[in-house]
Image (cartoon, rainbow, N blue to C red; front, side, top):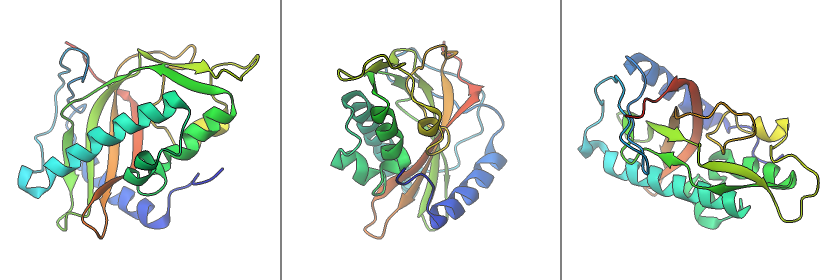
Length: 209
């Protein structure tokens, strides 16, 4: 499976971000849903000011999430905007979606996610960052492709393990509910933020008001 493992420099950056985020959490990340009522939880104070690139980081997050959902629904993991904004491999999600498509699975509907994620960390050189946000897959479900016959609308284990635990459509028998997601980002030499990884944290549920 292509791009099934993070590149070494991404792993190193991921470790730095995860440690920084862990030190700053005092509770679940606060989120407000893009299509659902506001989500409110106890959170640590934001650690990043707008002057430190938060505006560009949030803009990248919004675009990438839109591309991700569109790519999964269309069964098209090679959408060039999706791949590019994910650092050349769609933050590993290209392989994740391709594996689902190979199993005869795509998605339908639209999940809800935070309109204003919490920019949790930016390093001093503004080259790596993380955001946390709330993601609700309840109205985003897996379905069979038109060519799939007799297969379950749930990707196989290799698809689920392709990049760890990304936010994903609601699979059959999922305990559906909004949960926190940690997204890791890098800024490339051209000064553009790209997404390196998105990790679901189902043990950090969001409370929808």
